[in-house]
Image (cartoon, rainbow, N blue to C red):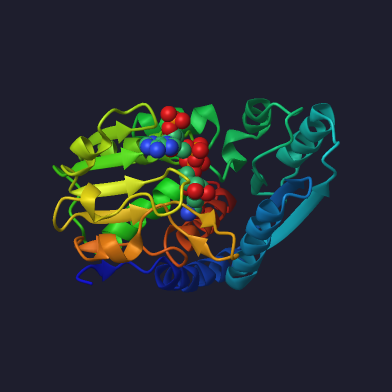
Length: 282
Ligand code: NDP
């Protein structure tokens, strides 16, 4: 293996220690940061993500509340709960864990959350602010990726970044953030023909597909930086990324592992956004 590992677990831990001090200072001024998470239904992955968010919040002193709702809850009821939380001054961040049951229109829910409490950074107003380079809540996974690159002083400006994936929560916003950082950005997706033609030209390759181990060294330019966003659970219960780690690590200069990569950084950025909301910075 030649690549250096960018360990998101360790970096997230460092950030949490810094944030813990910030929270103490905030509490001294009478502000008690609060993150309220709404969990609908019984999806085991969602439940485990929410547990991770609760645990990380507690580590930095952010108060977290979880509102658990049955999968049969109506969209109307969910909207009513969000409106109440929007009005509650003791709640600084609101997060509705996705995905939602099919009968609830996700976009209606995302747009109901006050942009000033939208710590996931999914509200169209915050997306628009991000696109126009204004200060806002940045979506947590893309923000975590940028923070990881910066933690290793990996140059972004002028570099060619190729992103595989164009979802609203990862692929598109990470491309925008990197463009804001003056990278040259190429987006690939399931309809891209001859994927390798693009990926082998990438200085930084970001993989957000959701299919285990499908990207190996054949897709890489020598010494590329590889960021693996994928989280895939294998039949044996273990977690793996979209990148074949051993193969890619033999050719890359830097690589993120799964687990202990982008996942913990996503949660760290959620805490960052909650503190920002508590400070009233948006
Ligand atoms: P989506 O399913 O919404 O998007 C997947 C993207 O990959 C789509 O744009 C799709 O193309 C593209 N794609 C699918 N198959 C191929 C292929 N064979 N070749 C090229 N492109 C392909 O997923 P998300 O963006 O929500 O998540 C991606 C992965 O990241 C998942 O494993 C998810 O669990 C993980 N994730 C991890 C997070 C973390 O904190 N580490 C946070 C969020 C997600 P098209 O648009 O054409 O369908």
